[in-house]
Amino acid sequence: MAEQTEKLIEFDPLQSHPEPPASGHRTRELKWRRTHREVLRNFAGQWVVLEGEEIVTHGKDPQQVVVEARAKGIRVPYIFYVGTPTNVSPVTLEW
Amino acid sequence: MVTVQYQHEFPYTYVGEYDDYFPILTLRMTNPHQSEQSLDIDGYLDSGAKRSLFDGWIATTLGFDLFSGSKVTHGSSTGFQTTGHLHQIRFFHPALGSFDLEISFSTVEISRNLIGRDFFNLVQIGFREKYLTFYLAPTP
Image 1 (spheres, each protein chain N blue to C red):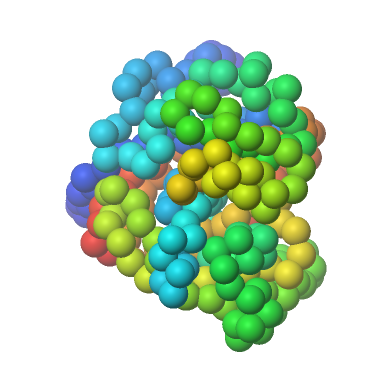
Image 2: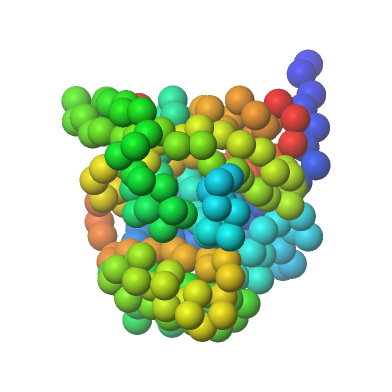
């Protein structure tokens, strides 16, 4: 059992998916997110617009961040939130 | 023996907040009445959610009057309740194509956008948690 747990901890999904599936959406950005965790930690508590491998804009107000991205020529911004690290375990809620 | 075939597989996405990987699908969301207003947004695949629930700021940014949609009350297993308003959204994903779905937008800030069973009703989704991978087929 202990050995099995160790194997699970060592599992790296990036190694399992060296190349993102071609059928995905924003695969380049999602791969960048998986491989640049340290960079993203600098944006904890903020919304980030990522285009390819470039952070276009960021900030605490998502609507303002979208406005700024569109002003920079991004027609359809890919925006996501970089959370502050927490020990809280997310649960599924029955909405 | 039951066999389900999937055409697409996706790795879970790393979420720094929880230092963990989650089944997240990035979808293009468009206001069908203002097609120039689109966003690419992450949604957590959540089979425990009866209806998809997204943060209200997204509806506003897409050009909706958040409160003009029908009001719905969402309840959780903890007893916590929150209000949402329904709006018709056009979704797009390369693996799924384009489709319309009426989803709820919250009137309070939520930490995660939830893709619920209303979405699962349109597609076939499978999970292999051990491999942090989920699978999609464009027909239910």
